[in-house]
Image 1: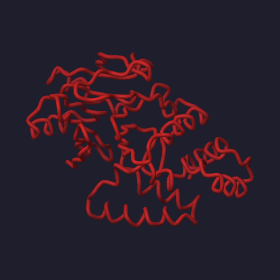
Image 2 (image 1 turned 120 degrees about the vertical axis):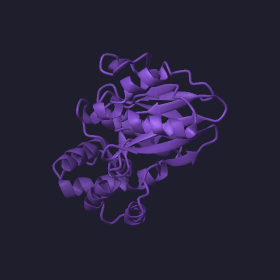
Image 3 (image 1 turned 30 degrees about the horizontal axis):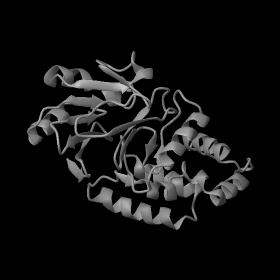
Image 4 (image 1 turned 120 degrees about the horizontal axis):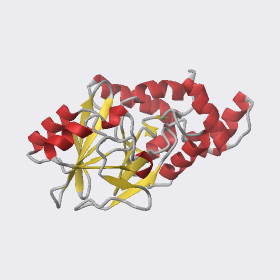
Length: 262
């Protein structure tokens, strides 16, 4: 378990399954302990026992099983409250509270903002707590989620929302995909020195069994190919090489298709 301190809370990062991350958010001024995307109940129970606190809430970013599989067992064990997107009410196990951008949940000791970041799925949401964004499968380290239910335009709109947050926002995504994503990033953005530095640093982290996540939003904007269309120079260069229109959304859509078949 890795832990990261923020102003009003501590984030505990739990590796799970093959490459998932589950996050426990522990409020500093209340008894709140929230699990974000609990793919596996057993490791959450162990972490709660280690902290000496019961789980009070679960927040699901979307309905996929590797984000919700622990819901039922954890609710049975702790009696915790499960929060998920209104759009996913029928698809999230044991959901109690429906939430969205205009109906953020009340979390004792924390101020929560919910962001609609559809694209990977039609009901995908993210949780913003101060300078920490729990974005599920929307934005990854040097990558973004596949478009299983949404359109390129929807995902690009969601990524733009995230890009408008403070550059110091820490990105807590749900999977350790960074090194593989960096290989693709270097293939489409080979002249980016920040990208080469990131690969070196993240390779060292993984060699020492350390997570590459969380990353900083500023780093993602500089190195993540799916945010690079925000840079006009990158957009023009990539569009010329692929013989497509030099428009940010068009370039993003082409990058997503390219990655799908890479």
